[in-house]
Length: 596
Image (cartoon, rainbow, N blue to C red):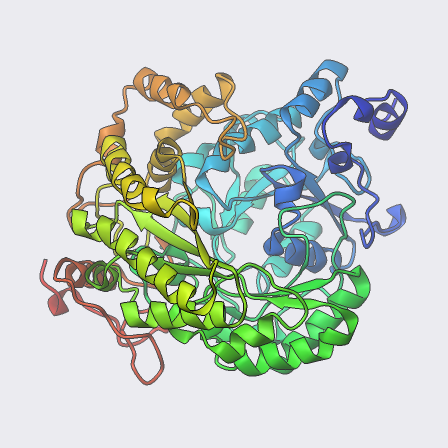
């Protein structure tokens, strides 16, 4: 009996939670005639359907690969544990949604690596597919396994499980890679890997890199591939709306932000192109909201013009426009009014730190008065509540910086009350996680007990404001494991295997995460969590990711770290004010420019 008959005729889907995750057959899926298919790609997202379907990168790759002649790309997601158990009991292998084909029958398995806590779910995907977990144990009978996404800037903890990694943005290179694999179909695996290693941006862990593998970027975002249609799910997903990327990269240089470093330089689409894409996607999907996506949406050079034009155009159709990432120093009443033309979406800002001193250290560059002015703009535009993101455990943080969060929130509430009687604030508080290829890749992470003490201080501060302040914080144990894997080395592959065999899947979901599994696995491998997390690094230390180049030089990152230690902010990156990071290929900081 084939997979589709097992799913639909043996009542399998009637006995699991949210069966719509596994149906397929959604609006706008792509299935080519069998006689036209020469090469098959399973695009896997190591999380559940509603998370993976919200990811713009997956939508771009789905359209890009299916636009290639003879190539059929299909989607694969992690089943929820109840469905995973059923699949194992009934002998149903991991399958694609488009044609319900076993993943093991595909030519290539591409896995998106967006977050470190998804790593054990990668092993779960391979296991459910019936594939050996280690690449050294997979011969030509199995699909090539290719990883991509931001986590590939340090791929070493996952290296033994993958045949290759693609480092960077895929739109300009991936099509050529796939078409080369189409022509080489049937060749021995070692021949395929040798050929893959010759492509820019490809890292093959089983072969010694000839030189640092440089992250690939899309030079011309305006004309880069972007899908005109999107698959419309039957079930609600996390970001259930049309998403158009308006810019890529960021000029701000926040020292904690990996994305701000590895996605340089900043590139934009014109308002005309953004509007064209938004209208195409709305016509093909029927959604009632358009989200304009970038690392900092209101740093887009023509943001007010774009929001105003698009909002006016969509207002008669009751379609709203939202911005998921806003900087408070660039917010205005006009922008707020344009955003609420149809309906009010949530306004989210990220001050990150409670004092100007600490914001200078992390190079956020926000003054208190700018934050208060942005809050006033939002409340004046009839928002009842705004959402604020803060981090605790930042480098060089002091107790007064934690108290500063409380003081700042109190000032925001005063501003809100002067405009709107019941104005409120919703706080999201996360622990700082040091990441590779950032100026803070050398710093230790705060211990769990230190972070818990900081939260107790904040809770005491907010107790009198309970009716107007909502707040929650992320799991500090999960942040520890994120930091472990972010800066980890190849020895952690065995830890991942042990955690998976102890039942660790969907570790990014708090209800499935269990710190004890990680502690036991580290102990069994004779590895010390403290060595990975709680020590400062020297400039001379060779990182596990030294063979991956994101364009930004190590010397520049070190200089930024030294400026942070001195409490000095750095200017915005621009053509007129080059910060000499190295990504544009000239003016790179040298070691002689900075003290070691």
